[in-house]
Image (cartoon, rainbow, N blue to C red):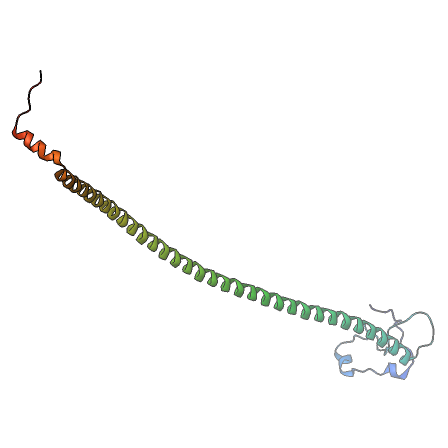
Length: 184
């Protein structure tokens, strides 16, 4: 903000000397700019103007604002570091979870393969047992039939032996030679 300075230049010897004499000859800008030296910002209020006091006050204001900015920057930096660390932990958890899922998938594939192999073995064994069972049933049927045939043959032979031992069989043989009388 520009301060209003009267156009009348005081009789101060420092003010009368031009700090840029070479510019005076070519271009006169003295009416637009003040050649007074300002020590600090223009203040209203008390008339005591000690340069050290105004510099200290302005420096403390700058220090306070610098401290506030540094505190804010420090918080941002800490938050950024915390967020990075949190993101890193999250990535590590995700990576560990994916690794666990891959391991579990591999274990399940192996278990599935083993169960499939066991199932195939059991199905093959079941098929073999059924085939053997069918063969043994048919063999059992054949053997029972043979046993039944042999039993009938033995019974027939025993009947023949018993029939030859009876005396009536001889009579029958004789009676076959003599015709029986006719009874009327």
